[in-house]
Image 1 (cartoon, rainbow, N blue to C red):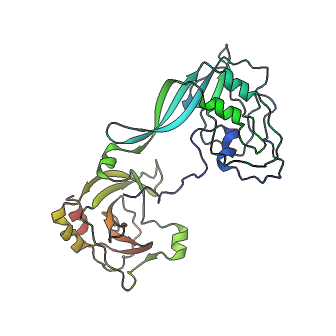
Image 2 (cartoon, rainbow, N blue to C red):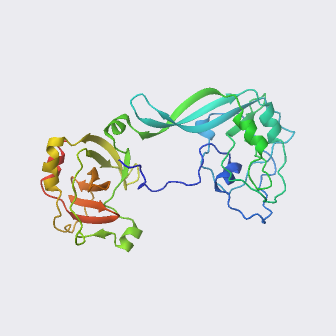
Length: 330
């Protein structure tokens, strides 16, 4: 299966490990002559007692909000907590996004770097901002904590002293928490994506561009399965619990080589899709068709339509009436 490039909502500028002030490192696009300085809180916000990364971590905080005040001399930290998100492979072949909470006791270097001032903005010779400090909080002897601001350089990016000290931290993992299943072991074994956009619901732009055709253009060949074709079955999300345009993996398998010809005989251009407003609860994706890596999607309930994607063209027709039963065999 291709990577989930069809899924919407992917953030381009959202690094995994990031302090709110450091977001500029991922999306810095301010002109060099703006004289920018971060809009910071006047005083540090000190909290009574640390709870957990699950409660306090904000990996996707407002990029352009107010930033924490720089660390002054009035708060005396003795340790730190670092929160991070990472992807981890699972024994069954799946992959999860995991939140990791770590404790740091040797904080001399990072505290010294965090006490540095912001540099005046000049913007000359700025880098690409690809490095980011960890998301951390500092704790004092009484268990109080604050999230320190990160001093920036003359480009409005985190100072190199903070970046270097952050990378040198010696972390002791306290707890981990799975926050999202990226792909299940069953989907990975079958060669399917865990989630797939409902291709039968075109976006407004796709509708406007007229990319969904009721019949194939002249000369367009009918779909033809490759020898090794994966059948991936998806169930639409419950509208009360998730995005109704995103389907979740249900099961998958390969089409036996001795059944490919039979299935190809059913993947023929048929009549234009009948008027229908029902939404399918399940659909099937057939990969590696038309010898160009294109796809065929088939609703196995609802309107029971077939959508063939060939070179960016979407042809929506009525599926062969025997297709759903045939696909159920795989």
